[in-house]
Length: 227
Image (cartoon, rainbow, N blue to C red; front, side, top):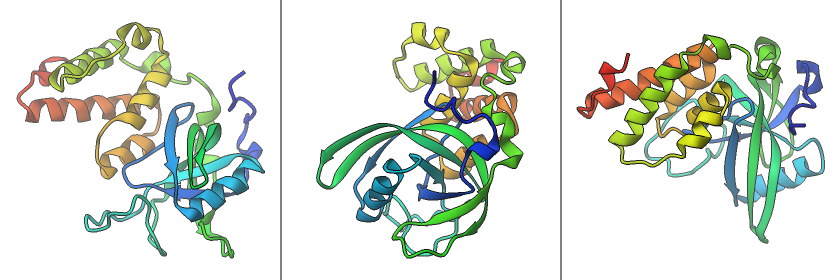
């Protein structure tokens, strides 16, 4: 049984969650996101969630200020309207001031408003209603053009001189492959948010393929011949 199978309907998730704002990072259902937690406020947040429901919301800042070197925004920085809540499924205490964790995505959410608390981290009231189908594992896989996705992926990896375990890729479900690629892909905040907010799995795969083909075309590779 997957650690996230316990969530079968939106009501199984809390209406208020702590959020971890990260620029250029997204989470998607059943995909995993490794995090290195070291800021004191997020160490406190992690202590709190580990003694509770182990749920953390990942969300991007609404602005992208190149002069801001911080991994996560300080102060009342605006946030994107859509994020994804994940469950801590791996936890390692590296030393007294650093934790290595893995979040496994459960479900996307819309931010409603920010809760006023005395906590050093931010807490949001959220709604999962629009994303109830996120809990249906494998939904929409039959509509994905998996053959074309794999061709574009191979071309992208070859163009960037990257290796891949193709046996593992072939074994992976289309949902896992698409969502994992979206989380791992090195695109910017706007592209990442478009992948997160894609209506369904097919739309997400189409956006992922389009982004890869645009990059291949701009680099002079033959990505546009893969359709």
